[in-house]
Amino acid sequence: MAFKIGVVTSYPPELSGLADYSKYLYTNISSITQNLKIIIYAHRPPSITKPTTNQIKKNLTVKFSWNHKSIIYPFKVFKQAVKDNVKLLHVHHEYWLYGRGLKSTHLLLLLLLLKISNKKIIITLHGLTPLKTLTNNFKKFHKTKLSITLFKLFAFTYIKILCALSNAIIIHLNIMKHILTNEYRIPEKKLYVIPHGIPQTKHTQYNEEKTKKTILTFGTIRPDKGIEIIIETFNTISKNIKNLNLIIAGSCNPVTSPESPKYLKKIINKINKMALQDKIKLFINNPWKIIEYLHVKADLVILNYLDENILAASGPLSLAIAHEKPVIATKMPRFLEYRDYMLLIKPNDKEELRKAVEMILLNQKSCKALKRKMKILKQQHNWSSIAKKHINLYLKTVK
Image (cartoon, rainbow, N blue to C red; front, top):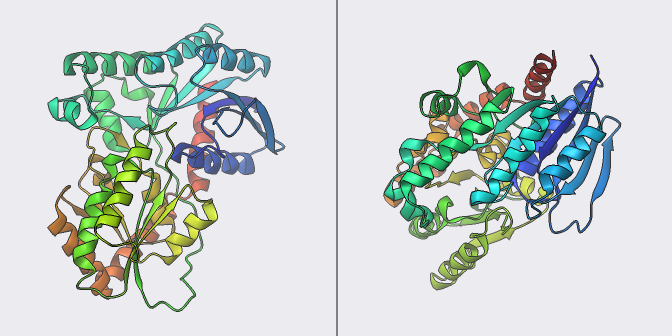
């Protein structure tokens, strides 16, 4: 059965994990089947100053057609979906993508318009806030003035309406399904767990003469990534392990993360204050080829996340798995499903982080065992199988 689907998401050249995710997913779907014509209504980043259409493949079109700063974007996307005669609209939801705070409710208007016009709707919730974590600690961590009671009410109502207007909801983690059914009271029959895909990157070694060990941390530059803790721990470890480097790589994009520029300055100041400029290198907003190269070069990846209030799959983890690198991550809910495949440590515990790093870098047996586990995960979650699961759900939804 051939039909058109519309997709509301972020797409390169926008700098976001969701943009990379969308590129992998829809290039794979378009390669697997010609029966789906995919039209992506992509969020227009500042680098694209006017609406632009890119024909990626015969059955894959990307239209950079809207921006959340415009309050009429729901009408723009709806008008295009009707004009293109799409049978189903797949909306990818990230908290930053549709505007923050009350601005995010504009998305509900788009979904309501689609529902009235009898379009099928699938939503992927890339992030979710467990209601039980909305405490005074959340208020302090996120520096919000809104009362916890109001925040809980808003979060609950928003997700309930979002899910009520959709035919199916995709989440990446089993724990997200548990939270939706038990805290948000979403019917289980609407929920589909489809993991984050893993690129099938060839497992290559750094082919220059390897005289140094390299630790890598990668992802959006935000305070909840705990990068300053990694720097302080690295400073201690580098005194015991010679020829050790730390690479801090990722995106600094005020559109997706307004706090990023200020946090990046804080990181730079810390590096300079500790006189670690020769041992710590920053790679910010670099092309994908550079990111791939850094992962090939790395001996170890650290994901020192500190925010337990957001449940989401980790794009940086997927990339580490793709390159079969040992990973140290904090005991955050998003990583608990992978506890058998990596080393999990307490957040804000520099001593535990130090021991974990030294165990991997100084113990070849432990390092090789973790690499083998990553290879298993890589095979299980390849993008081709993830794309097929989406195709099957699309077909099931439009019947």
